[in-house]
Image (cartoon, rainbow, N blue to C red; front, side, top):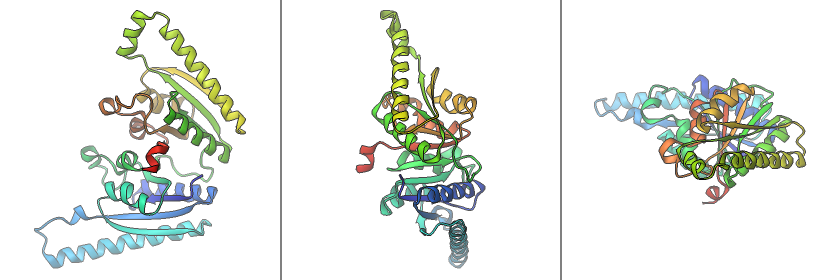
Length: 299
């Protein structure tokens, strides 16, 4: 499934949970685990600091990062992993992790904590997790749950009939099968202003849309069962997908992993209101796997 997993650590509680989840995930799927820390050079861009003081601080900063990576590697190996590497890099974490390291090391799954040490800065420039979700060419798992050795038991995947969401469904089936989890396939019908105008001219539009969605969900359920899934449920809901999927359905159905496509049918609206994937990373109380478009990975 995933051959090379990259997890970013910074010593925060959230990144500790991401590391634990990455260790369990890599062990379960027999993956190579790469552990990285990016020395944020912006923290040392202060000309008022005297040269020797700046060098001393940088040396301390580097030593702490090296110790963090070594400890992280020891934890992974103590858990039974044999293929573990560490990567120390400098630059901006929001760029180096998703755009440089994922390509240099042929990563197919990037794992990050929801928040790192600079939680306040998140309100200004966005978290590393959100930057990774937007910029990474590979799938991204944003860790929010407390790590568990059982990994995931109840998975929710959001679908809308698009090719991208079908790729997310395929990944969800694969993960649920491997972990013997229950799979919930959800579609949220969004009734916005555009749909209301259609209803004015086509009175049967809402009934037809609901029927089409029911048929789609049944087709996806049968697809999952054909691939060996035993516990498959479908959910048809209405409302704003950006709110209902991460805030309502994940809680109501006791979900521990939410899977979404990077973009769905309404890719253009993503630039106005934000994608379901972005909203899920921000608002879901559970771990979120963002599945990237296969064509994007090839670029």
